[in-house]
Image (cartoon, rainbow, N blue to C red; front, side):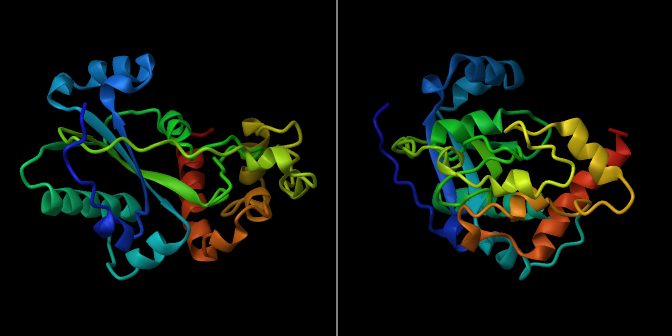
Length: 235
């Protein structure tokens, strides 16, 4: 598919959604295409999939200018921003937001294809530019013809890490095998006096791209949300 549309990320970048990757749908892995066809009967109306995320702490800072009473303020902010970006810049094109929302999509697989994601011992994805301080915020199906984004070429920063301080600072030793023992992690987070109830000591002690780390307020927000999910579903 020949690129004919100009990708204009300025509004996204200004609002903290500073990671974007464009894929042609027909060039995605077969399992993703099959899944998309299963969930979206009108998939043939779209040519591209756009993955949008944030790296660093600017998204959180930007959100504070727009207070929200929503129980999911980051999702609400991301949806509004992405919809505005697409409508303003591409009024003659169509888009379907498939994340966040009721649909499922393999975010980490897309992140790997974009070159954003490497596996870390504490489960959260990691890369050399942002460390573990990035996240996926939106996925769109579009009828655009943007130039496809070339995958970032990088190796896992964990491979070159000699000290493994994330493993050292994990209280329940849930990372000691090099990958997260989810049961040990959850059991510790639920325990009385847990130091990881609203944070992750392994993650915050990781030295990779620590200059981009989230504020304590943002870290506590995310881990409080995950803790609520753990308690609600009795994991």
